[in-house]
Each structure stands twice: as structure tokens, then as C-alpha cells.
Amino acid sequence: MLSQPNPLALQQPVVGHLVQELRQVLGLTQKKFAAQLGVTFPTLNRWENGHATPSPLALKQIETLLNQLSESSDPVLREHSQAI
Image (tube, rainbow, N blue to C red; front, side, top):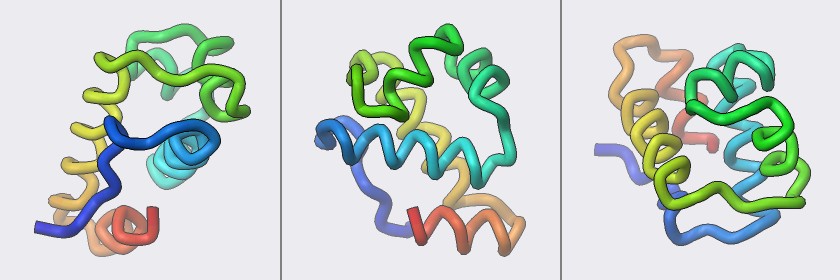
């Protein structure tokens, strides 16, 4: 298994950068990524800009997405997951 940053152990601004990188790798807008995580667009925007930290539940969802990305059969997604 690939070594991934543990979002549960990260603080701002690192977690905001991780959220933004993950969203960009997935090719999602902030609005679509927010919906996928079950949060509002302004909430996701605050995370990415370092003005707020995701809740433990949201961090767990982000961790799950990172793990799915690292296990993807798509070599491009796997490569990006290693870079995050």
C-alpha cells in the first residue's frame, strides 16, 4: 500500500492544501467536491484557504478518498495520489 499523508494528523494550512490538491486531481470544482463530501461550498472554500479545519468526520472522508485514489487502476490517478 502506498504511503499517504494522514489527514487526521494534519493542521492548517497543510490540510487545506491537501484538500485542494485532492480536488484538483479528481478534476472536481469546489462545489462538486463539497457535495461529494457532504459539506457546503463555502465550507470547502474556507478549508482550502486555511480559514477553517475540516471536522473529524470530513477528514475521515478525505482519508477514504486518498486511499481509493492510491488503489485506483488508473496509473495517472495513482501517480497523483503519490504526489499529494
